[in-house]
Length: 419
Image (cartoon, rainbow, N blue to C red):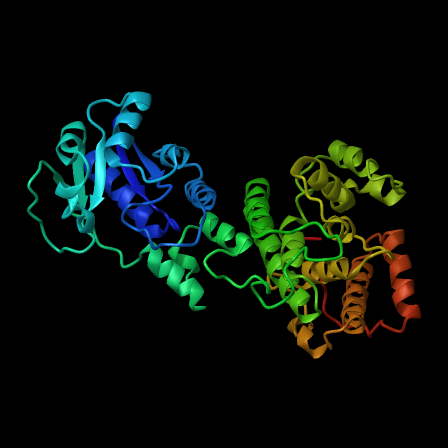
């Protein structure tokens, strides 16, 4: 296997690093590039921010599923300042590459290469590849090298850190996995006291299970792999609306988004598995549910999400459990998910005015009134189609009516094919 080495502080890794690695692979036909984060770079003594473990984790999160890129933590394990000659010897000994390994240098560092420790030996042990960072044309260097005619991306780790610290936009300068770690760990001066949208961070206080951005990304990928395209599109629209509703009504937007993106993960299950999983929640299986096992996808999905995916937030699990038929025990997040599932933007046969939830005051009473309206419209649509209605839904409707939260039935339907 032909290998090349790309070392650096990766504080943090950004799209320019990956663009450069891809350019080397394309131009010179290497099988793999080994990314080596420095424990302490001799060239960037003043850089601060991510710890060695943070930087290693951000690298791993940046390259999922790409066999062309590897990561080696030899310099982190070595600690202190590592020298390139020692790293090349270590990589060559352990990886046994075909021919000399490539050594990728930016032209900003290449100019100082003759001053490096054992520079002549490095040039003998590795094929030096010089990538453009500062220069627009070929440079002249007093040692054997190959020059990469790459496009120069105007991005650096220092720029990313600076933009984060100054509150400027930065998120598209780094891979998504790296972004989630920066956000979850609040690196580089990202505010630690606020969530991304101004609310209290998800999972803070009250003994709630923490909902991290990394968990959301993981579960969104799981949903995308499990659901067909149309249902995933519906789930993401539901997640976005649920997050918006949570912000308006003073709830945690991350909890709303997570509940929305995973709420239909029980849909693809077969009837036998739906019944088996639903029984595990300890509740009875009604006659209607036995007649139409698809109604169990919320209950079964909640059990599956807890057992197979490790979801621990009880309010999220309850929201998923009750989103199909509703239940008198529904909490605020469950009501939000029920609303979002029924009125998200791909639902074509609803009154768009329902999505103007800002007309409802951002209180628990405001949420209950919107929930009562949506529940009422859902029941009206089911009755117009002469469809069976679960006992749980009817009991919930009676409760809503007693509280005076039910509003008049309109002529539109809450259909759309995703119930």
